[in-house]
Image (cartoon, rainbow, N blue to C red; front, side, top):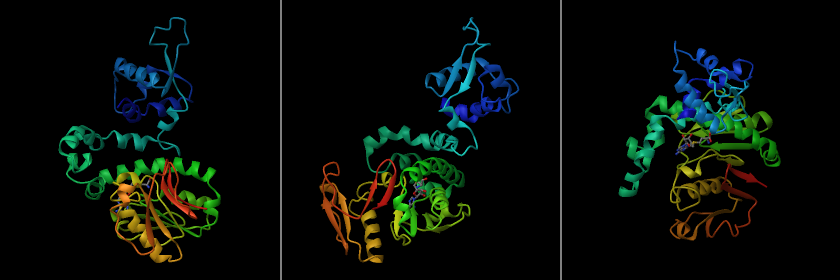
Length: 314
Ligand SMILES: C[S@@+](CC[C@H](N)C(=O)[O-])C[C@H]1O[C@@H](n2cnc3c(N)ncnc32)[C@H](O)[C@@H]1O
């Protein structure tokens, strides 16, 4: 919450606007919007915590270092993520993660344990996050912006470290791609790729036009657009084994769709034995039970969720 406070008060931007050199609390306070007389002792307590967490730096230039008047606060490499409007800003994600709508489910954990069944989000809001977003434009925008800002950062890392895979595909679909930031960045570096951003219709309705990206709305549990490669970031964790992540239904259903379109591909659904034991049969897709930390079946391409989720075309 102190982080959210720093973002809302634009403290990093204020220090940055002074040339990035450390400044006093009074200088910070004098630049806070919509507050004729900010509470400096309060601000001091917030800053002390954020300094302890290594989000800002503190400097005591004078010998009487106890004087709060002379204490200076500066930016470090972490506080630079808090700059609004920068390419690498995480502010939309911080505001989203700390919004009461997103914090409310955390207060339902004991209810989840006692009652089981639906997710904490559903306990708090009566429906899942996607349904909630479809009916609440403010939440929809906040969620999409939060996701998009992380995508800008992660794409840079992926594009730096992962070149060959993108080089050898002609088309790519980002399934659950939000408003399309990820594929748009990929296409900038690999303009030969025909890119599709696929997400729920209410998300696609707010997606901006992007060079080289075709937005398609739909439900990935029913059908996904055809492409040489499927890309997913931060998707599989949102569903249970049974819905997704290999498992018995969802994603293996999606793999079955891919295999229908590209019958030369042999699809393998690999998951824990207890999960594949109840998986339904699909034409062209087989189930293998095992432990991915011991060995995984051989294939030309692996579809997996790790820190970054993607299909790797080898
Ligand atoms: C955690 S977000 C990840 C967004 C994006 N991949 C990123 O990392 O920035 C999950 C995304 O899945 C989308 N989604 C949820 N259910 C879906 C469905 N049935 N079909 C397609 N997309 C879905 C959501 O709208 C949301 O954009």
